[in-house]
Amino acid sequence: MDERAAVTETLPADAPVARRGFGLSVKLIAMIIVTILAVEVLIYLPSAANFRANWLDDKIRVAGVAARVLDIVPDAMDVPEELADGLLASAGAAALIVRRDGQSQLVEKTDMPMPKTAVEADMRDAGPMNLIGGALDTLFRGGDRTLRIIGTPPEDADAIVEILVPEAPLRAELLDYSRNIFLLSLIVAAFTAIAIFLFLNRLLVRPIGRMTQNMVAFRRTPENATRIITPSSRKDEIGIAERELAALETDLFEMLHQRKHLADLGLAVAKINHDLRNTLTSAQLLSDQVATLDDPKVQRLAPRLVQTLDKAINFAQSVLDYGRTATAAPKPQPVDMRALIIEAAAEAGLFGHPEITFENTVPDDLILSLDPDQTARIFVNLIKNAREALETRHGEEPARIAIRHHEAGDWVTIEIADNGPGLPPRARDNLFRAFEGSGRAGGTGLGLVIARELTEAHGGRLRLVDTEKGTCFAIDLPADRLV
Image (cartoon, rainbow, N blue to C red; front, top):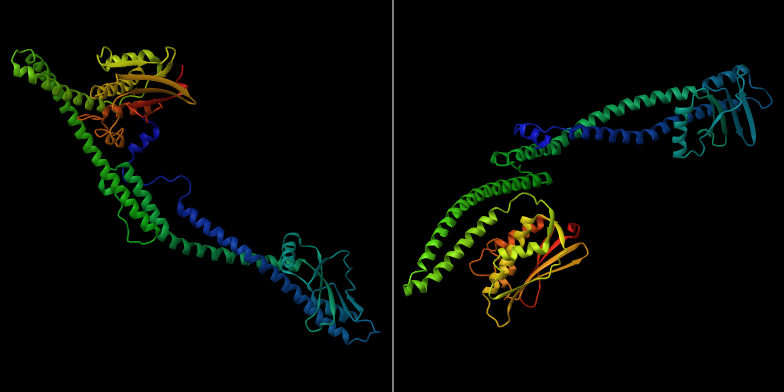
């Protein structure tokens, strides 16, 4: 018994299922939260871009108002320093350029030097991807830089304004906006995940967990009918799964009880059959003594009595042999196949037979790694079946049983062929089926069943070969059995 089996046996039948890693509930709620956050990120990017664009448009709008104030100043006059500082302060800018009709007008703070470089933000033709890229650039690379905002004021479509502003205030406001959006998204994701989880937990997780617990409990005690799941009245896939699981467990429960009854019945039959065989053997000994009497009636009836007793003993012996087929695994060792077949033919009552010719063309050097006892049983059963079939035939051609051998590809094949009457249709239809595949009246068909099971235990196969006359069985064994 391995360690896992030992642990399973020590657990109580109603013990909860041991979970490895995270359970379905944790995975489900984590998946929901991650999915909602991913959706929020996709929503946040356009939102942050729109926030930055509105901030820049506000600066352009204020710059447009300042440009209209500058229009009332005569062209030849310089802009008063106080007016310039007031206009720039209202826009939060370091400098302002107004272009109209090919002319430009510059207003700058006298106490602030003009920056040598500036990041351009042209709002005249800003696409969605440019706006998103600009927002990400401000978040991750902004700070001490200067923005050069270019745009057309809404109140003055003929003018183009350029305004130089520090980027730090925009980045600070964008960070605050992002932080608020993140916290709001987290709250929305948490509440949404909980709501969806409660719904799915009731709809899927709990029913699946119930079926899982039931399958584990039923596997531990399949003979307990109370472990069979009671399906719900649901009409969806979960309901179908519950009903199918209940039907499966019911079938397994009934099958186990049926097999237990059959096993008990088989044990009882085996005991009765053993005692019956002993009784029949004693009756056979008495019949042999009766056959020696001089009474004509006894001499006429004794052969039929002996034949009937032989059939009954053979039937009892076949049933006992079939009950012993659940033997240990084969113990291979080098086997001389020609010698083994000769011994099997002798045991099957073929040597010295007055009517049947036996031909064994298996070469002397054919050595296979097989279990000698189990292999002998295979050949004894097949040769015995062939002998019994030939003993009941009526024909002018001499009866013959031939053992042939050939090798092809991955298989070594040994054939047992006879020129008897062949298998009747009923025997062919029920071939290798216990108590149904016999080719003669009163037969059990157990010899073929035992031969096939023992052949398959060696990794081979037993098959019926189609022939024009007689019967031929082929034993195919793997070529790697060659020694």
